[in-house]
Length: 495
Image (tube, rainbow, N blue to C red; front, side, top):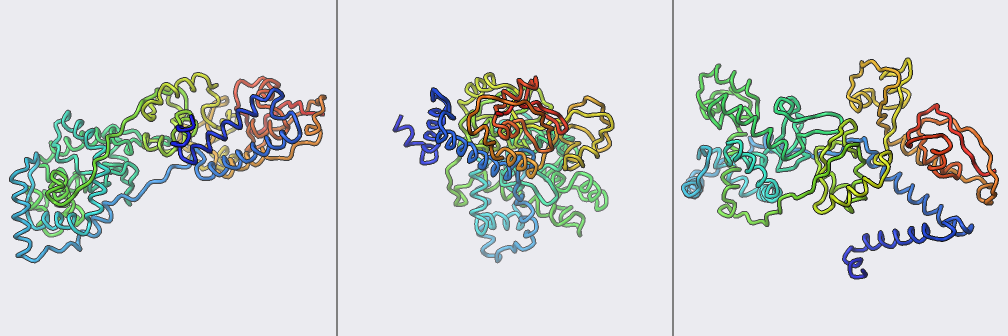
């Protein structure tokens, strides 16, 4: 056991010691409040835990969307005009070397070897070497999956390297135009090709689902134009733009279209040769001086969830970090799985499925996620509830699958996506000073009423009055921890 704890590192060992101390307090015959000193230490520990939880909530309250990162394609295309060709003698020698490589490498889309493609091969091999190498390394974990999907769908395997330019294989990459994911789908195009997008999930960020959508979209574009170079131009600029430009200029292939005076935007003119250059290098990286250790394909177990679960709970129950759970499930926009989904497939680290299932079975469903619900009353509207709970009207509507003008019916249950400030308030309430009577340990109690205020939680109220959450549930016949501002609770606190 000692050797195992040492291998955990200092944070892992600290966690083991902390758990051991808490277990010791819980297993004490007289409980953690048997003496004033022990009670004081125990409550100080609880307050410190609450403080750490408050900091975590401030960083991510479960409803703030997780951060994205800039997609590299914006900078690549913006700087493409500043990629001058090499002097002619050097370019001829370089062209011969690339031509010799292509003669020995079988490609499944045409690779046009012109000055623009060569200029990008040279750029990627030189000034952008580190960026390309990092992208190739990152992509190695996704390429087996992408190639498998493309092989099954009849898409050229060369096109598996399109994400190297689009996103450098980053699932959470977002462009200035709000295209997202490894394949940089715009929202409308994603929906047209079967990807889901709502307040909780954005399947553009899921590499496998987005790859299937990309295969479908690329096949559609190829059927439309009958040429992979034109299909790639349409992938970047949109099929309508390419069709109009071809009709206006009479061009029959991409290179004619590219040479026509401003027939298509510069970004689209540069996009296709950039993709071809990336394919040339990616198919034979050693030839161009790239050496890197391929990363293992992503492996995971899958658990079917019938109720929403907080990712922090999942992380705790699987022994992983929240970052690891989010990395396995990049489509999740929040720190919770979708509230309305009764069959959501969550990915968890390999080997943790059974332990997670056992914890789910042993835990009351109400404890799966810290969600705040409101039962609609007569006269409630989306706008009035948004004002009352100080949340965005759009967030309130989207979180419940509604529109800002949806009519609400009495008795309807709505999820309230609280902002970090209100969560902090509810936690602060839990650190209120305990009453002197309770500290004295008197045996008598007195019943009183408490009106629930905005930001209250059952846990915070229990701590305020020095009672347990289970007691509050029993006294008020509550089946779970849901409470609503305006509710009246019966509390039996120490006299």
